[in-house]
Image (cartoon, rainbow, N blue to C red):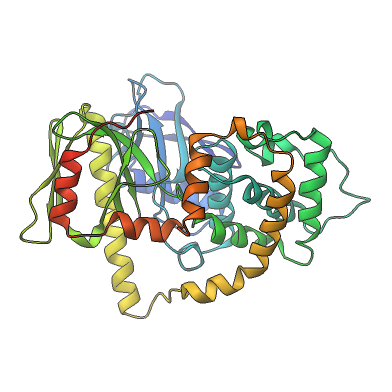
Length: 383
């Protein structure tokens, strides 16, 4: 079996130390880690790592770990246990308190570090829900100012855009926290995720690509399909291709070829320069497509009951009122000169009555043939 190799598996709540051998598969380690964390075996999760050249990748669970391009010179070998794929409906797919908590902390991490765009008023509400999830109902005697660490709850972008002191941010988050009174820790996590799954950048992995003309663009791969973004705007997709339209995905060196279901549609082709990165793009596309198909089969069999959007909207009405109050308060102390391109794009879409799903539908409008031709004609946008 060879000499055991030391590994460190990081996750959002800490680290696990273990050893593997040349014969250890990703699945075997996956089952070991799930057992130690006390979580369900949810295949949305896997092990992220950086290869010897510093590129991000995920372990293939059905393969031997040390036969993959992990950095074998790294001692111990570092792996990061995290969600690779994202649920369409968190209530249906995140089974068990541990899975829900780990996924929530990963999403929160993305919001706070800015990799998932979130408007300021929603960041404050999320901070309040986070405090409720960690400490339950606010208690003046128990929860002094040291409990609420602003920089661990809000993105740096949001803090810098508003003329508020550390204590003033604490007051606003604390006021929102008080309104969460009576909500259990577990429900606070799911309330957070039910809102977060509707954020424009939730669950999207971006890759820089080009069309045949050489126009630099972003490909966004996610649970419902793949979208095309201009280089200066990762919030609003220009074009979209849902998984239901896609029959086959392959690549040859630098060129990807997407074959569509529609017989009159030409192949959708794009270019990406790095072979190892292209393997990751392909694996992510294939995995998301497989999850999409299995979800539709489960829905057809009655195993998943998707909550009607109108029902969910009704549940969120109280939340919307709270967000409007937070927004009015923050607008009075906001420095408009510090707004980012993402802020202005989100605001523009909101003023037009658009949300994530309406924007996605618009990007997917027209037949596949026309969208593919539009992709070929895209020019690089000015930054």
